Image (tube, rainbow, N blue to C red; front, side, top):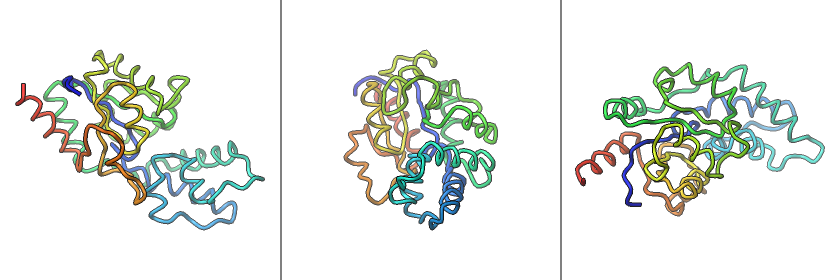
Length: 225
């Protein structure tokens, strides 16, 4: 993609924040309520970015026919809401990256499939994230990722053409959404990438090993002008 990067949008879980400890704890409580063993580390790593559905499906193996999916999801959300930031942390390097974007006057925002009410509860624990110029959640519109519309809407709110935006996320559907929105899509290599995932096949603009790697990409872009 030849267009410059003039704005950056981030996924939340597995990209800006390591929410796995609290999301896994909520999922394990649901599993325990129904007599199932807790999730393994590998299951947590591979499924946290897929939310309640991903974690619970991994834990149950297959959701039992006698259990209602909506009920299980609500159980998960109730547990998660009660302890939304007991073990969650901001990834190392994110604060440095966001400070760089601020100094360089590069607009940035958050586009997450996390429900709005949970996002609103979580972000105030992290002052650096409260500086986001826009926050679009999974229920802001009637569609969510991998549909491109939430990304297009977020870029519109930032006031930057979608072709000049980069989207940073840690799962394949993030890259699918970025491509569909004609954005630069970069894989957050520090996120929840499981052993069976193959990020090199996700048709991204690149895999960033650390958050600071995006600074290098933006600096190179400046020097190439």
